[in-house]
Length: 403
Image 1 (spheres, helix red, strand yellow):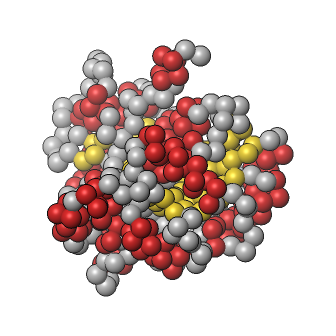
Image 2 (cartoon, helix red, strand yellow; image 1 turned 90 degrees about the vertical axis):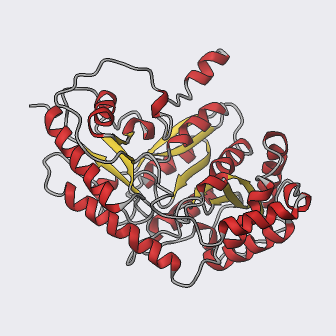
Image 3 (cartoon, rainbow, N blue to C red; image 1 turned 45 degrees about the vertical axis):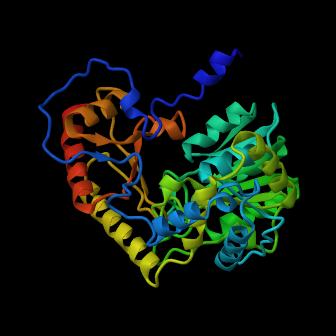
């Protein structure tokens, strides 16, 4: 493979936030532009859901402090690591040593990159869920791993993720050394059941595999949905990394704050990789971690309730539309929407939707090549604008539905 081919395979044209960079193309427009405020469902709206109270003030204080906050050790400033470790220990129920088991990273994306770089060498078999976070498959390819897809039949179950545990065991038997997955799942928003989590942990331990668990949305789980932290179970594999951060539910994504915690030897490798990749999680920004798990009383519950209200309003619009399906989100801010067969391609339809309705969504093919009749939305938006955008989507859908 040439260097050009390697980077062409990474493909970012359809990644969230990159849509405006797509090359112009002729589109078959079957109506005039629909009135309504633009809504970009490819990511959350931090103007509609403001960041954690006090976050800017803590950041500004870090800037005022100067060098001590700007130039921290590669893993992060000692006092902030201590706060993060204590907070996550209380949240997950796992014992976390700030000196051995934690690293602060440039966003959870940075944590994922470091964790995969610290565990994959060319030729390694890596099991990934389909559908799951779009960058997972791209990073496996970048580091030279061989992807082993594990189906998640989320449409066939009413609780849990519907992961094919038999397929996962076959992957381990065939030599997969690493399994990564998000919980709650991105893009579907389903939460893995206790039985699924404990089975994954026991299986990884039995076959000596490493687990990477992305728990980015684990603070945004809706009422009545039980959540199981794999890192806190009695039987866990020797090599385990959990990734989390305050970027999504807390609307702090602009600060690029991420955390990885787990096996000390892997954290050490991640530190060495961070030292040559980004040196550290941005020094001034690390100060904002002080607001994490320190939100005003009731703030997090109100934030989750607000998102549940938006989710339910959007699902009400989709209910009963022939060929349209979205499993209700159990955790996080995503809906993975199934649409009927169209008389244009998925990617053409998504561009048409953006042109006619000022609605931006992420194509399902970012989460697996087989998802040709799906797209993902992030419903962390202004509620009224989001509902109106879904109504415009349905108008456009009827114009391009295959007869």
